[in-house]
Image (cartoon, rainbow, N blue to C red):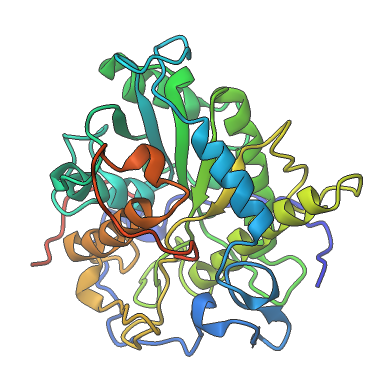
Length: 368
């Protein structure tokens, strides 16, 4: 189904709970929404209209042409000096996160490895001997209070913060950023599928803009891997509850599909929602990273569940156990995907390649 171009609308970043400064208990009784994870939905239809699966035709496997392009991109990812020149001895490959507070929570919470909070992806990666600790540097560019609309232009302040407060203190530059994990959402969405004004389309459009901004800010970008939101059925605020967390999976699915279709049918107009995603000119190559959504306590086919204790009191941001779940899924993806092993796995490290498809505490934190 092709979507009509939707108008961008203003959203409020801060929930009422944040404005009042009062913590709101999670709605722990909301253990399921009845929705089916995209990875399990396959060729089935959400709302009788929207096909599941991570990739076209209800598949969870990256199409061969996109896989080959991704492998070619991986082969060009090499350690680089601060000017972006290949430097196998003293250079770095920077793996950067871009996103909002949940992204930061799950990725590291500090500015980067080794100074990441326990159980986050960065913490787990730092402790794993299979990970390339010689030339790979994992940096947290994600920022609390910075949803998708704050990353759409290459001149947005969020990118300057990454440059000046995340990379520069480590003696690193934008020219060394070659791989990005992108996880984004809109704050305060109000329209869900099947409406033609659904936030899923707004987010897809914004993600397309972000990819083009990334290409400008990071000239040596080779790969961008995307994830959508975790379960939000326990959410007690309007920041990004269900069904918007679930439907953000369609935003990513449609975005990746738009690039696959555009590159397979050269000469046809770009997708009218995602925009131009040509990875030889204006955008980086993209694919799914780990798919993170499961229907609360209902196990998806690989056993993933989300229980209330996996979240902080707002039911939206992950607790330590939630961070661990996301971190473990991301670590497994980067260790085992043939698209990432050449630069993520330590020299001499042994992991098994797979076909690319994909004690709780509450921490003080800012809203967003």
